[in-house]
Length: 104
Image (cartoon, rainbow, N blue to C red; front, side, top):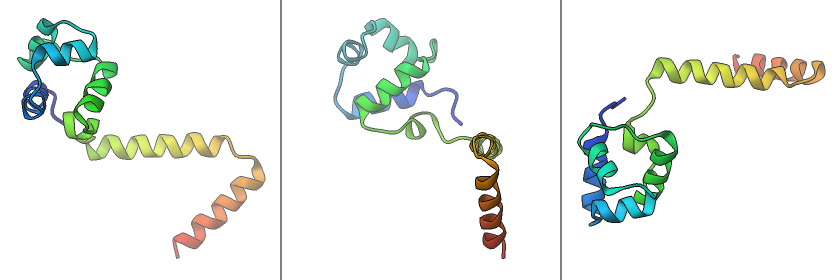
C-alpha cells in the first residue's frame, strides 16, 4: 500500500489537464490544501479521497494502492463472521452443508 500518494494525486490531476485551483474548487478545499497533499505535507481524509477518485474516474485502489493480503484476509473473515451471526439456526445449517459440498 502506498502511504505517500501525493505524487499519484498530482499525476492524475495533470493527466486530466486540471489545475490545483480546479481540483480545489471541485472538492471544496483551498488550492493550498491540494498543493500540500501533492507535496506529501498533508493527507486527505477518506471522504476527500473518495471524492477525488470519483473526480478522476479511478478507484481508491488505483489511487492509494491495494490492501495488503494479510489485511484483506482478516477483513474477509470478519465480514463472513458478521454475516453468519445474522443467520438463524436453520440458515446456519444450510450454509454449513453448502460449505461441505464446496470443500469436496
